Image 1 (cartoon, protein in one colour):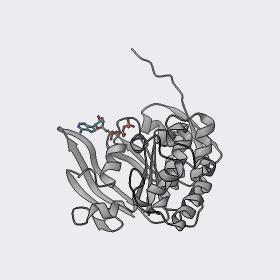
Image 2: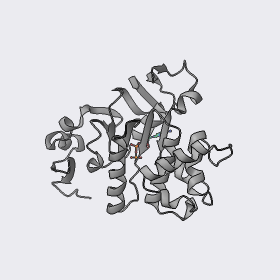
Image 3: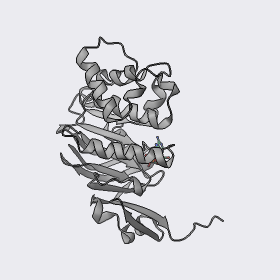
Image 4: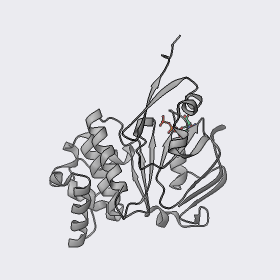
Length: 262
Ligand SMILES: Nc1ncnc2c1ncn2[C@@H]1O[C@H](COP(=O)(O)OP(=O)(O)OP(=O)(O)O)[C@@H](O)[C@H]1O
């Protein structure tokens, strides 16, 4: 699905990504974990073809960037991100927002068929937001908007679905609901490959079999989540002692020392 080889991104003389090599196989779901400024957004922009690496090679679905027509390739990549949320018109109905996902458009301008509406209803049901379909998008809560955006992304039936910090701004109840829905989505037969970007270890759901730990623009480690998310490893990753607890098949993190500010 994804093959990055020695990807380096330099902007304004600053090295933002350094020698990032990463492979994602079909059937795997990955989380990307890193602190603020570690390069996660830059990595996503490279993956979507919006940012051309300074050096290195990017291949998605077996298509080598630089030798493929990116607008076509992007149709198979779904993205759920805060920046997309801001682009949606507040007065648009939820149903229309979800339907527009089929055409990857902001706003619904194309003729819609009955089967499109059925598919939209199927995804809204999956994301438990079917009851909101007549509501205006702008009136929804943050958590409801995220559910709608996931349903919207699924309408294009992408091969790859990227979540960019989808739980930002959600309270604990809504966060857990959304995470449950993502875990449920992963059990669907037609589920795309999922990539989940986050700052928070506890959001690494059991379905994310693999994790990429990104630190200062470099791959700190990558591989099976269960091997990476250990106390010893994460203490080195965060440069400070941490303790972890395993609950609900997830890893919950606490700092052992309060960070002193001088
Ligand atoms: N065009 C640019 N020119 C210079 N520096 C940049 C540019 N774009 C990003 N950076 C820097 O690169 C680093 C990585 O940025 P990036 O947004 O990819 O990190 P991130 O892991 O997504 O951070 P966050 O979790 O805070 O969103 C940051 O220090 C950022 O300031």
